[in-house]
Image (cartoon, rainbow, N blue to C red; front, side):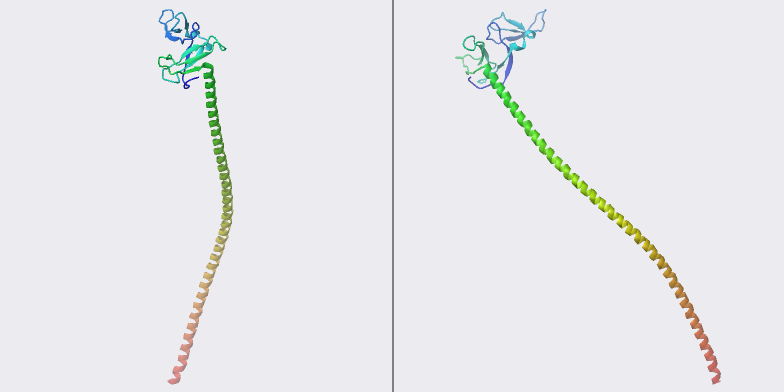
Length: 229
C-alpha cells in the first residue's frame, strides 16, 4: 500500500467483461425505457446493465485518491498469481503522466476501514461510558442532596413540633394569667368598693365628731358666759 488513506468512497459497478473498468452511469432517453438509469463500460461498449438489475454483491466501494486530488481511483483486478480476482485501487493518473503513486488493495482498505470503524466505535463507547459515569456521579450527588434535604426537612418538622408544644404551653399560661387578671380585677373592684365605703364611714364619723365638738363647745360657751355677767 502506498499513499495516504482516503476516507471518501463511491459505490461503483465494475464491468464484468474487462473486470477493470468503472462503469459510467447514464440515463436512458428511449421511448421504451424513458429516464431509466443504466451502467455502461467506457472500454467495452457491449457491456451495459440497468441500475435496478444490479445485485447488492456486484457493487463495490471505490475510494478517492488519498495521495492527490485526482478524484476517484482506477480499479485493477488481478487475474493471475496466488490471489486471482483480487482488486487494487490506483491513482487515476497513470504513472509517467504525473501519478502520485497511490495504490491500495481492496481487502487491505476494507481491513483498515473496519479498524477505523472499530476505533470510532471504541471512542464512541468510551464517550458513552464516560457520559454514563458522569451521569451516575451527578445522580449520586443529586441523591445525596435529596437525602440531605429530607434530613433537614425532618429537622424542621421536629422544630415546628417543638414550637407547637411551646406555643400550647404559652397559651395555657396566657389563659391562666388571664384568669388571674380577672380574679385580681375582681378583688381590686371589691377592695375599691370597701375603700370607698370605709372612706365614707370615716367621713361620716369625722362629721359626727365635728358636730359633737361644735355642740360641746357651744354648751361650754353657754355655761361660761353667765358666770361673768
